[in-house]
Length: 345
Image (tube, rainbow, N blue to C red; front, side, top):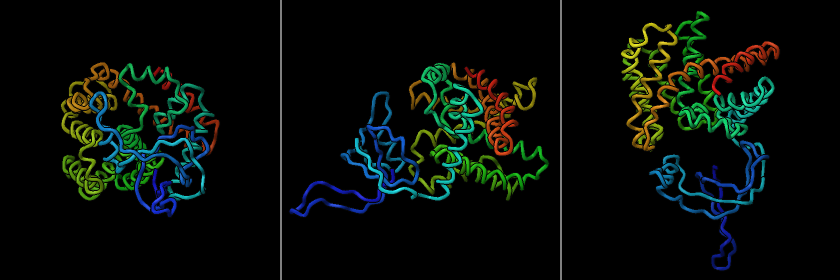
């Protein structure tokens, strides 16, 4: 939560409560459901500011995790009071309204649990996802597909590039169309750090290729890292930053070798398998270091699930776009997506 003012109930020299204008973020833990609040609402919360606790069981350091996001204090509250609506960035408000319309359309086109799975994969909305479905994904090592991340940005980038190039558009025009669409998706999903970072990486990459098509992919990756670290130096120490860049570096380096192992497969499937395996192999040491486990089962399941998620995302966005024109046409695409989503179960 963005904070503008802090008021203390303590008295100082009999002058009553102290109010100070501040700028910053606080991690707010509400003991009540916040069902009637939207982005841009100004609220008043009451509680005690505390320092986050450090390392927890399993080696995860909560305090460091928050500090890398510019959050230094927590506040638990059981009282939230609405002060004013309609504040915030107009672009963000428009994006969140678009997201709400997408959620309603998905729920109209698909039954449960397929609609809940699609909302999680496309938008990161897991509110209506049944617990048994979550557990199924976690047991198979594929729970990450339910959390919008850099993987999703990469898959959407691939889908958009293929779509626009199939229409016969030049690489230059395709890049100019793709970059704002990726930025829109990042805002749509709440500008989560991994998504924002992957979007910046993609934007820097496409920008470099527009200037010089022969530039080394490792140079592009280095420029993207430099750009992101200039904006947020503390990102260097986060697991998500390290995993993102190690994964992309692994894809660049290992994919050509792995493609040769799948040469009997169709081109699109061969590339999908090679890219997925390259990313997973490259991050195994970091996964072992940060999470104390090596997901061997996930290696196989992710090889199979990544192409399927690509299809689900493509059909999902196509059905939503078509839904703006004709619900009947959107329903046909959604029915095909129902089969793909059901196969995940």
